[in-house]
Image (cartoon, rainbow, N blue to C red):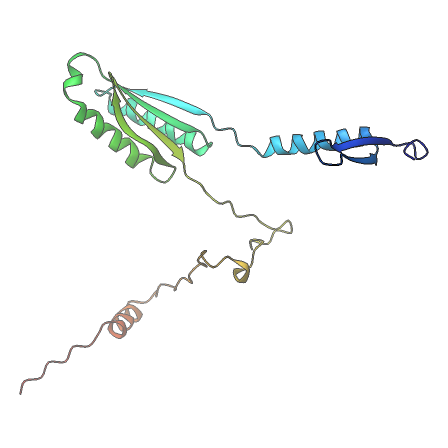
Length: 190
């Protein structure tokens, strides 16, 4: 039957009882399978780890440069391994290294979060920062600034954007709005 249709008889499930065969174009089948595999490889995320090495007595300008590099790496989607190297008597004061790493965390806040807390391993104190997950708003091709999803179609756990009240421009408006918003306390003597 397959020969008359100029197709192939392909065994799809050899372990089934009875084995399952299909009549199909085997070349087309292999091509479609390779396309599916290629598409699944595109969707995988390759995360690389960049390492930044510091010393406890690093200068302010050098630290700023290192932090700027960390911010670039995190914004590109890379993880950052921060290694603080101690030498000699610096090992007697690991709290200085902890303070330095805390300042690094505070300066990259918003771009990255701590994946692995700082820990002392021999003469090195290491910490791993991971990039923050951010949702990118997609715009319509016609130039409208509205996202594709409507507020009604948002999941229940996703909050809709709250309306922003306009700030009054006149000082008199500010005073009247403040008076209306403040609770009135009435004190009476009896």
